[in-house]
Length: 230
Image (cartoon, rainbow, N blue to C red):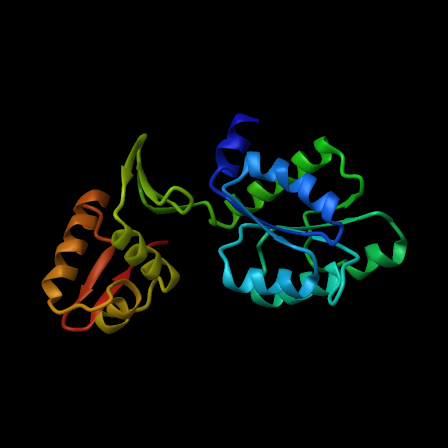
């Protein structure tokens, strides 16, 4: 349980439920467990929140105004194939269960939600995030990047990263194996990069933290950088 709570405290949850009492009471549990809870009382707002916020786990009521939970889940799956999603409902009619087959859901929970069943679904969600390298990503032997606390784990030592180092590394991870131009790095990380030495110095510090013997951040002369990891 401690490992689960240690993971959850960094995660953001999207919770969509049109019953105000149920949503507010359940959100109190999430507030105690997670980093942030984004609430919606209809499917349209839930989908918009998913598109604009950093969401790690999605919890959708099946019956909601505008868009029901199944339709929201289908739209989310077009955007993100692996984010953990589970659906809640006051009923368990076969047609409802059949309509969500193929959406790769974590679970389907009947309301009122049992606390143990909820925790089990959250545990499964964390496992899915881990299996899809959405919590940690091995960069090279002995060095792992933690997406949640934005740090490097080097053997058993935690190495903190600056805001710009995090943005730079995550940009390279997102496009690993491809060249990321200096211009794109400037647009993504720096409001205005007047001197390339600022970028070079940041890269030098990051390489030193990763270990200079681990040549995974490659300089493409006069163009940009590329990350080479398995």
